[in-house]
Amino acid sequence: MGTSVKSIEDPCLRHAPVSKVALVGFGTVGSAVARLLYARDAEHSLQITQICNRRVERKKVDWVPEDVVWTEDIEQVLASDADVLVELVGGVKPAYDWVSRALKSGKSVVTANKQLMAHHGTELLELARECGQHLAFGASVAGGIPVLSGLHEGLGGDRLLKITGILNGTCNFILTKIERTGSTFEAALAEAQQAGFAEADPTDDVDGFDARAKLVILARFGLNAEARPDQVPAFSIRNIDGIDFQYAHELNCTIRQISRAELRDGKLYATVEPALVPQDSPLAFVSGSQNLVISTGEFGGDTVFSGFGAGGNPTAVAVVSDLLHLVRYRAKGTAEPDRPTATKYTVTGDFENLYSVRFVVKDSPGIIASIAAVFSKHHINIDAVFQKSGFPKDALPFVITLEPCRFSKLEAALKEIGQFPFHVHPPFSMPVLR
Image 1: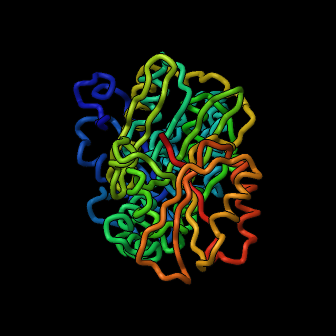
Image 2 (image 1 turned 180 degrees about the vertical axis):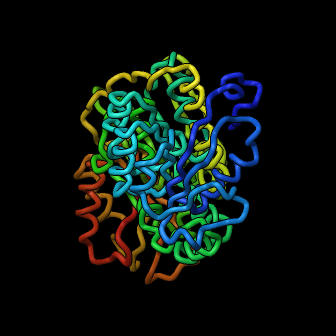
Image 3 (image 1 turned 135 degrees about the horizontal axis):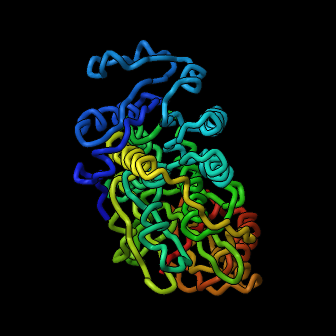
């Protein structure tokens, strides 16, 4: 599904009253938002009046009109006559305070802040309604891909049951680099950092916290299911190595960081984790820093949203699209629309899956028998054993695939198996999605 900014042909945009915009945050995304607004200034009624950033003197550029106020003082912005505050600083604090106060002071808000919306989205939307303002957050998930509006409006006639996706471009860049070159995780991460895809501290990305925040937002506004980020298990991709892709290919699969949320049996099942996906799945074709989301509806089946989910320009398109959406609301004099109250389900990561478990051991007789005995004890059936030749006996990798079982059962079995003395590295499991 492509992304487009509404054209000048929309009379609501041509004839709408001027909306004064304060940009809070003028980094990669903030500067891209400003460039996009100025590039299309004949097509809308949005006027940047203030730009707020730390050490703002370093941020000033000559292509911003002279009448724009540059400031480091958020209080000046909150007390101004701006109609819309665009929050692009990220994180929960102090963004939560700024957005709350902006809404209370009579300003609508556009944000790309996934952590803010994951932790406080429901509360802030209710505050926007109470204050007669709007809160738009389409850029908080999947950057320039209009997945939130697609789920909420385009698929509003369906009953969505499941959302599956690749929501973090950094992880996808790293995993595709390992797959294509056989490099280590550390080398692929260093390349991602050098290319600007990964932060100096990559924890949020590689350990799943970034994708988890996005998944919580998708569950809330796609599945109408309330969840807190800390309720959703997140697993790291740090243990992935080239050998894992070799064995994945033996199963006609590849490896991606997969975020999934599913309503089933009166519960919300949700996880973020590396997983094996079939090579003919749309998820397998997502390369580099791209994102993809698949929604599954009771009546409409699968719908796929794909594109670039990060970077200045794609995210700026989503932010500006939200701004234009607010212009149309203002022109029509309509308030923030009511959204159904999200249902609080029991949240669990205890999916039932096929599993692939990679072991690295000091080779000796009886290893497979010892492992099989523990799996049998926990009522887990082995499907197959894969062992490639050419590896040293003191660090021998092999893979055991398992028939469908609950993660909780597998976790208990691997805890027991991990006590055996022959391990060089702890056993590493991944679900096999079908």
